[in-house]
Image (cartoon, rainbow, N blue to C red):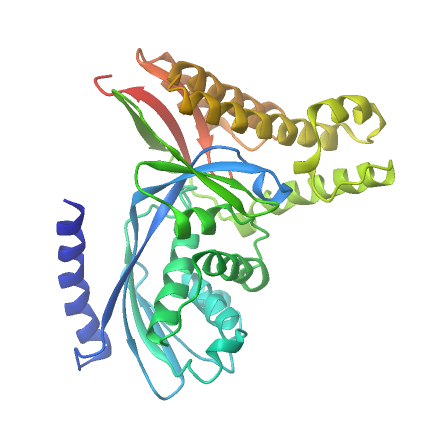
Amino acid sequence: MKQEMHERVYEKLLSSFLEIFGEPKEGIRFFFAPGRVNLIGEHTDYNGGVVLPATLSKGTWVLGRPRQDGAYRFFSLQFSNLVITRGEEILYNKEDGWGNYPKGVLRELSRIPSLKGKLTGADLLFDGNIPHGAGLSSSASIEVVTAYALSKLAGVEIPLMEIALLSQRAENRFVGVQCGIMDQAAISLGRRDSALLLRTATLAYEYIPLSLEGYKWVITNTNKRRTLADSKYNERREECEEGLRQLQRLGLTIDSLGELTEETWKEVRDQVEGERVRKRIDHVVGEDERVFRSVVHLKERDLPAFGALLNESHASLRDLYEVTGVELDALQEEAVQVEGCLGSRMTGAGFGGCTVSLVREEA
């Protein structure tokens, strides 16, 4: 079924590609990168913590063809605007909107020594079916598929983790969103029917089989869009960094909140100034612990215990990290009232977007 879908998309994109960019067909290649849903471990990736995302069947498709004149032309069927740039003059332009994501990736690729002299230009046509602003990583999907497509068109193999890292750098440095590595790593490394346990401080990862046995994931969209760069996402990150600085001044030899154990946090919590900062650290420390417990429950196939942790995670994001909002809270509260729902939580950055719920198939 998935292969048939890709074939239909390819035929649609090929027709549009030739209409927009012209002949020839020779040299055109087809690429895909999925979206992702984070099962548990929210707002921990940029704190050096652990996360447990999984990839979606929805994603971003690209048809690409190399050029030899140094020009890069990006067109999206979703946004219907053409973005043109050259390798030596890549500048952020708010009017380019979505096009700043592939531009940022191109700038990062241009800094890789092995690609020197090989980035000769390309035409890329984008299409996708990930809802934008829903917390399912539509932007990271664009970044990863761009990095993969441009490197392949240039004839260079880049390790998947490096594709994830340069995509993250593009979002941090070019777009201006201080995201962690989770989204790009999950999309680059994801495997079917598995979650990715990623230790963001070391980039070590492990595949965790998802044996749902009569249950399914239900993703529900609030249809309230949020733009990370315009939301309080960066503010939350700054609050965590302030907490880390205070802990270091107290003498803790840690480089991230992800290294802070529950035991140590209990000992020093009252010495940290600012209730808001303390609450943010409460969430990060507790969420890391929930991820590790979730992995144990999934390996033991104890889905009710895992579902309970989903509910705990949402409560922490609501009360301690304060990133949910009326719409997400309402969806989560309604979901857990459904007979056969083991647990539900917001997923993504929050402030809108989606919930993810573990629900019996017949519910």
